[in-house]
Image 1 (cartoon, helix red, strand yellow):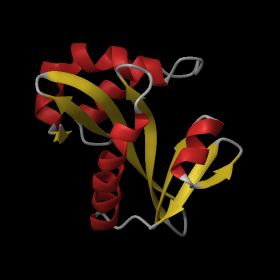
Image 2 (cartoon, rainbow, N blue to C red):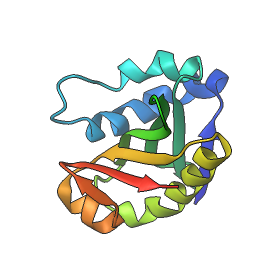
Image 3 (cartoon, rainbow, N blue to C red):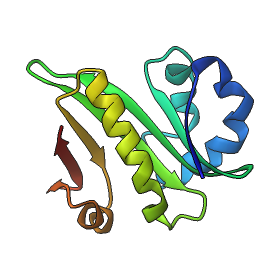
Image 4 (cartoon, helix red, strand yellow):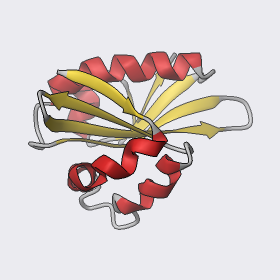
Length: 134
């Protein structure tokens, strides 16, 4: 498996394969759909990460930096696997994102997740919003 941070100028070439995976992460979230992230990714206001198993995209994660008055966050905006399961395979990607966040001056990471995933991550559960101090 390969972990890739997709350069903004290459996002359009894989978007049709990634969008359905991202939409899985947003199921039930009426305020967002995958295409809402396309333009921010193209202008580097958000970042697309994928896990590729040989030639298939197995997982996709979208991150963005959020500047709060006192701290900077790396927010996981969407996180999905092609199967809807196998999140254990995504953990190496989370380590890559943590390093990326640190390099970019983030103080913590945050994500909106279902309660079961919050338990697996062992992050601080805050009303289905989890955080991890870097």
